[in-house]
Image (cartoon, rainbow, N blue to C red; front, side):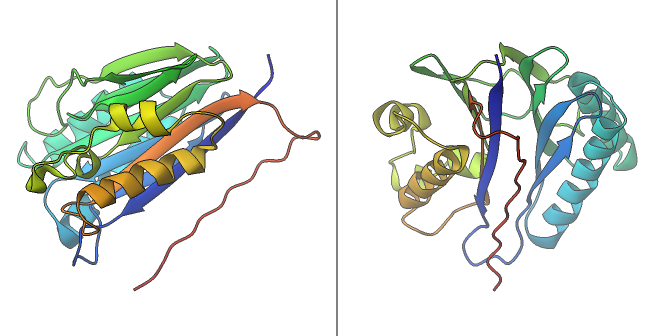
Length: 236
């Protein structure tokens, strides 16, 4: 069945910080499809940004070469572990729509869960992996779903998952999704809603960098097919 892929990102940096350690990259897969890469570098400020750019650049290069997502995660881990001698870590999440297998694949080295909706029911799937760069034999957690209209997937950096912790009212993405993220939604509306609620849980001042990546599959729209990419970046 023909379908339309929507991928959107909503992100912000830690309050009173000028740099975000979160980096997001979007890449077209050489055999067809798209991958989005989300990296959160250890530390804060410029050092964290430099690390996340290093990791994301390596992942994107491998994806463009046609490497499978799980292999990409392993190679990037080995690269970081060797390059920094096991002293620094980063989370690495890859979300792909693979048009060869007609599946959506999530490959994660992160402690954060992913939010999934298949049919009408949301599920928060916990992580079964750890960050790259520290332990030599680290492997990614991989989940695979049929690429069918109606599927929604959201990735988060840990700033969203831990939003509200400081005030004793942690953000619950599953409860929020079941209550508020119902009916037709674009990927951008989904990402924006998650980020806005996480910021509200931190009372408007993000305790950490926050990134929400949303992917939705829906019925194909106009014909002839037109691909669009949009970015909005507020500058300080």
